[in-house]
Length: 377
Image 1 (cartoon, rainbow, N blue to C red):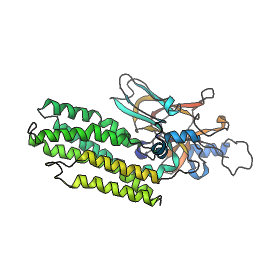
Image 2 (image 1 turned 180 degrees about the vertical axis):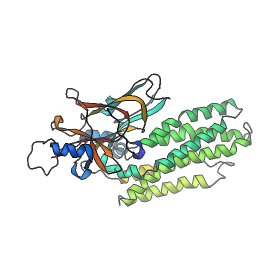
Image 3 (image 1 turned 120 degrees about the vertical axis):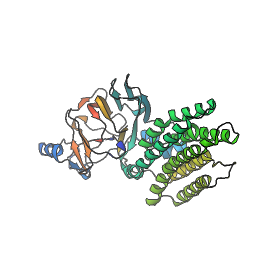
Image 4 (image 1 turned 135 degrees about the horizontal axis):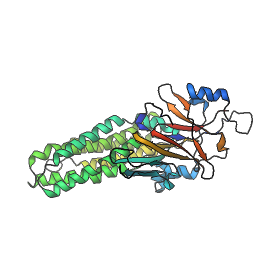
């Protein structure tokens, strides 16, 4: 299939599924007319002419952050996996309600983390508010700081540095996926896999087991780690505040944010250390308060994100499923559209194949972009 080239915010590949517009005069689902199809394939259709369909309530409970915070539900609807270039592999499947991507061997030039995650279309503004460029800059700076620490002569310290570096790609994919559905995992990774290890090296410096020449990159690494956690937190707070959601929770979130900031600005906590793990804990609590302030919405649009934005060396097979949808229409009337950000319109994608027995549709593409399922009546 000829590839479609668009610019994509956060490299998102969202698959949204859509029912007939409620204003239709008949209860039967009508497929697009030839005129509609011609327009869809050239100029595309405005989003206002497409109506989103929701996931089943039990699926929303599994993927919604707020529900998981309140009821301790297990995370479902997402899979993160490191794909080895020479082997390839599949990301997604049972935990993502049969939405998945199959990456053949040597479709990528190096090992890379990928994710498939169900999400909700109506929270797109939340995703757009996240400054992913700043997050990636902070991760790159953190990697630079950790690479400097690779010169430490203490073997124990070096092991901690290498262990921290090995988790950066995983942290990056969580930042790429960041949305209303983000769970606490990135905070835990930042704290346990980076900040705590960096703090242990700082203690070795204090005990004169590691040269003080490494103090500056250690402190910078800790600061950048905490700043990533802060960015995740402030995005949720800003969204809750601008939407005029639960002000009590928002105020509580700001209080936790200030605690985290205090750990970053008061140097003399323990000799010359800033307590970055404690700062990350405070930022996580601020994020939780903000997420609790964001209410559920009616009929949230069902979506699936395939991340990060990647240009593959050969076609990959993407399978999309309507299994988890609150949907009882005729799938034969569904069309797939890709989103053209430049024109803010949805363009019809040809050459997709339905598998009615497995409730899926699959396409072969050489890059991730944003797709939607729908029809026009």
